[in-house]
Image (cartoon, rainbow, N blue to C red):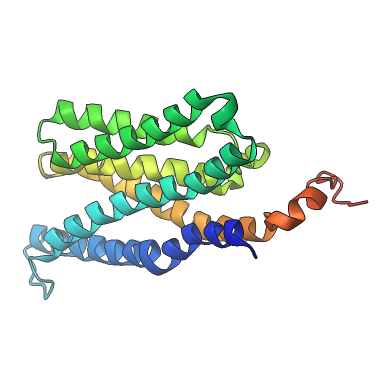
Length: 229
């Protein structure tokens, strides 16, 4: 493995030792929060501490930022590799400037989303940061597996990141309406299923994406008929 192959492992490594444990913690606190709410509604005693709801919110906000961050990191390596390999700076410097600006734009709007109080501003920043994620995901070099989008690590990741952004945007509303609370639960249940799928598809893609020194030979293979000359 050379440097570019090692850099490719940064994204899955952070996912394994940091993001996925956060998913487990957030899920645990979510179940505890719901159990406490149901117990309170039925006027039953519970040993679940009142602080569990606050902890769930804190971990959830951290998880959302982490998912967006690791998505941007995962896209950065193939984008940068393609830009360098195709000598884009010499031929089309605007593309590099645009991609750099989109990274700054996406991160900035996400930060503003976390600071926004009014619903209109939260909706605006959530939309802008989601657009940034999607636009960056459309850049050349990213392994999308579009022909099998329904089992694509890329598409799972983009949808999960956008759902995390939406969850942050609607968080204050779940305390005002049961409908928003149910929507929050539904969106995050879908996100949890996507995270499970990402664990499976991510491991698969690491097996399918060849090492850099193998690429010239491997990409000459017939992937439809699964043959190599």
